[in-house]
Length: 230
Image (cartoon, rainbow, N blue to C red; front, side, top):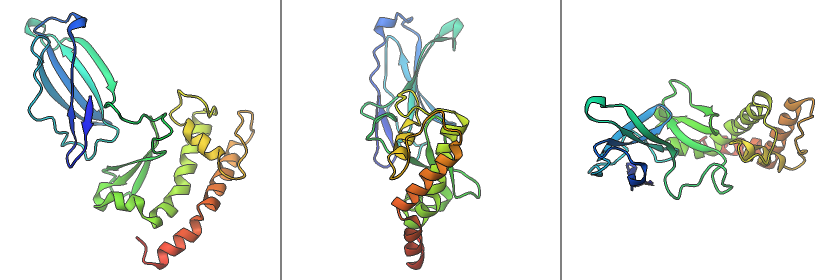
């Protein structure tokens, strides 16, 4: 799979199903999904795969975090019966969450009612900006918004990681939040987190304080405010 960005995202797929010995007339579908957004594309049959003319993902505002699954279902009397599925397929060349080059916090638009932003924590932290703000990418990048939101986002993620999930291994390759712990431990003056700490909340507050000092959050806020906010 590959996902192409450029206005409306679009995907390309090359399917090889011969080795799985599915019935030749079994139906093949490719599904793209992200959270509750989902769309299905028919790809013909096992013996006659046909790529749809239109594979644009117009239901999605960007290609970020889109995953794919391939379903093979029976036809004829058993139409719809599941014969095989490959799930959680990432586009080729996409940076995965455990790659240190990947953004620590991804940003995406969402329908949030009257809230400006939310932090989604599972499976990995994502900053959701209300799409009703219009240019939500500019909102997320603005110094005023970052000064107001970044310390709370860090506190929220670390609390979820250390207090709720009790996942304290910064080198745990299976943990989608381990990079956040490594980031917090890299802040000036922050001790390495140990599982035997009696007060995780105090360690989290130390990390947030170190972050705000390093990023000069108050100064950034005052400067942006005096210049007229955004």
